[in-house]
Length: 277
Image 1 (tube, one colour):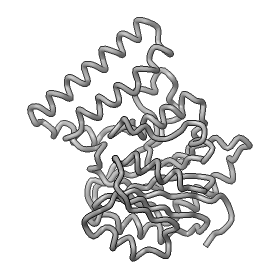
Image 2: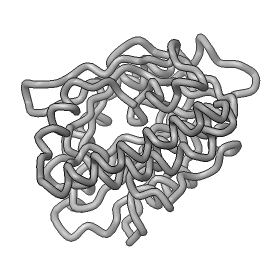
Image 3: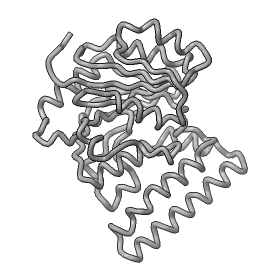
Image 4: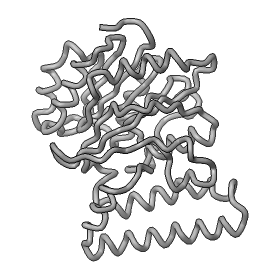
């Protein structure tokens, strides 16, 4: 068990997650790196989630169970409790590889700078069932201010954020119910926070969360549109601004009709072949 290197705070937020959280907890228990703290924020679950969590008390540094106003409120609670050099959020239906934290710690020691403003981001697998997954690559080297709205280049569950970044950027915006994690990464990008790519798949995400659900597809597009509007006029000329504005409106209209006519299979196909945004 490695004890040297940065302290990593891992935060898991959950609510009625009895079907999936055990795998999440087991993945933390199996880590080959020991200089971490594990914070679990539960939204006052009414199923067997809390009993399962109690079985893993030896690996949990802080456990909170209280009502919250949504997943991003729980994120903010966890971040406020974190004391590590790096902070990661591992959702209750996701899991790490056994060497995830060790890989991140080793990379951190290689690239650490004096300012401390950094986000380490890795590749990730999105699992559709026990046998089928898609690989989500990192695309941060190809992104810039003009294509950042097409893809962020990194998936939030595969990010390890320095404490100094949260001090600079602030909390997750709880006005967003689906896309506050993307909004946070977008704010980091425009504040000049450096993203360091770790080209290794060390995080696993189970498909079907709130941001990957056909029932919330229209709401997700609407939130993504709203969070991007403040930046468009800063980086595009008038023609491009109008173009981006109407493309965004068109996407919202399409999503509305997908929901109205219950043709969600289009969204499911899209999810299996798309790159992360």
